[in-house]
Image (cartoon, rainbow, N blue to C red; front, side):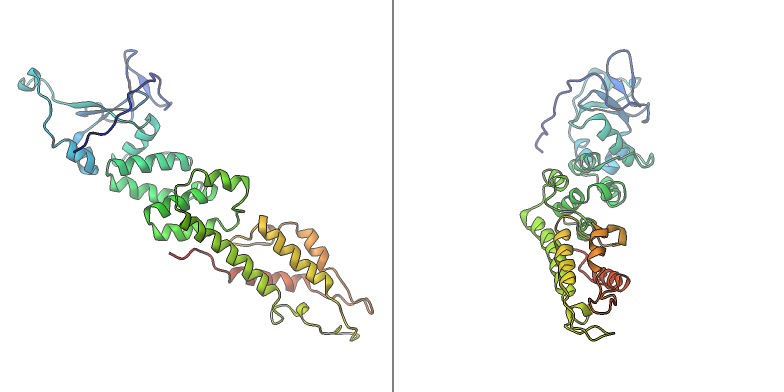
Length: 311
């Protein structure tokens, strides 16, 4: 078994505020067992006492490690000396290691504030072959605040691991995003997904805009697409404002797409768009369009659009 490259600790202070200092030397995390027979040391020199039986039961990596021949000393022959493993220096920081061990020790869900923390824990769980911890993080990233604040990062994590249900769900959370905005670019810069997975997401966004464009011009859905005369005075109407409304809406959707759970508040530049529908017959003054009817059909149209990428 190849030995892992271990980054030597360089910092004496811990990043975790719940850590106490012992004898001005290394730091011990207070959340974990004081009588544990294994000691892990994070890269920022926070020490964790853990029962080896827990590590054996939850980690394939540690289970293999503990089966390897261990160095012997004179104390190994003395029954009065309690045998222990460690300290074993690992490359994770204290916050990541604490959260990971909190999961595998069954100490309740750790605080995982953002996608960066979640990804660090996930990578560590995969590194140490901790299937239970991987499953926990897989569940956590699909709920607020992580999925709502970083849907592109979650989509990337899911794509890289072949999590099909999570891929579809995360893709639906990206629908209200402009994939070319600075905010999206900042997320994409830290994504490890393939070009193909990104292309599938972009194709979903493009298909939604194309479908909206097509349906807005459908005479059976919106009567303004017909050349019918005024219903009251039979004056031949010109629907220049309706054409302007459609063009403006499609242009708006390039930078402010409509999400899966679309509401009226999501319609960008709503007053300007409504103004375009405030047109009347030049002959008798009868309103040419119904804002209420138009919005009702627009909402129905959005609900029928594709919501997720194909997997």
